[in-house]
Image (tube, rainbow, N blue to C red; front, side):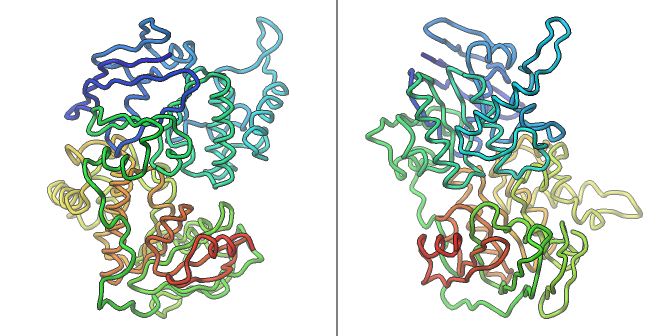
Length: 496
């Protein structure tokens, strides 16, 4: 039904795609996997009419097509769910779902038919088993809810070809299964689906075939019978990933005294729920729980983004009352936020500017920024954290997801952190980049830094944590030592 032949694309200093071939059959789920920077999103943006290829061709039903804009692709029945959500905060849910395709009445006058859009949005969200109100303002929704709105918009297109770029990166297990039910129905209806995900367990369960890209080239195709986690990883990275999780501190290393202590801590989201917990120097404390349990709100309160309404916090035994992010930064407490593009980086700014921004005064003399010192510091950070970048002068927006995540971390490391809070540290990044993030987290811990890791990925929680605290409705329901951790034990506390 769809064929891409010899697709190539160059960006300044980077060959993003080199003669890539891809084909999709009717009623098929084709998983497209590869490390960040492998070319997956670029290839899909060409198919969606966002980019134009430098070479190669696209065929639909055996006929060559040329896309000059996303509208051209949409007319051919191609819809895309973007990894970084393309939604408008100031509109409601229904308006976002039908943006650019609004239902109208009144002929030439074209009055908006809001009731029809609301009813259709409610029907689509019902298919996803979501209770999001169609008239709710987008800015009031969580990241997971926004992701469901993006999925609803793509489904509303009635597309023959649906591209899903990391559609479950912020969804719960229940929401993910609801999406899979929709995918199975779309398959039955004859739609072709290209499914991009770094969650290889999902790929194993939903894909009919897997196409693997590496460094902008085809690395292989796996049939349904050949699909396995190890086989996909081998094709993606060209090697086995040994010691993927660094499960505990090195032999002989001892976890030190408490770095952060919370007593009777209450957030604005859950004013009636108290949190008391300890994060020790040299440990990775995993914070598990279902979406909406209050984990991100707790992280934001600790880091002064949304100060607590009551309770006490202590850093190295000294009282700490965060009223702003600057208070936390001054005490060595840094947040790696869940939504790195909105809250972790200034994407229009260069890599160099992002690295040096939190401590820009270090690079100034009599009020003038010393550009040479900035360049040296940024280059050192990029080398230390293996950030793949042709130049530190390029915009942060042009980096892959994994490299953006490492860039958020890079800007804090020079400031000698005491506590680093990672909120969904590997959302939307590939297995190779995940392994590097895990390595960096464990390295910080062995240097005496306290790590609080919030994650919805059960394997990530169990694979990296020295202890696991489980939240439910804004309070800590229990803390498990590593020897006590199991999926069943964590879920039991998460739903109690």
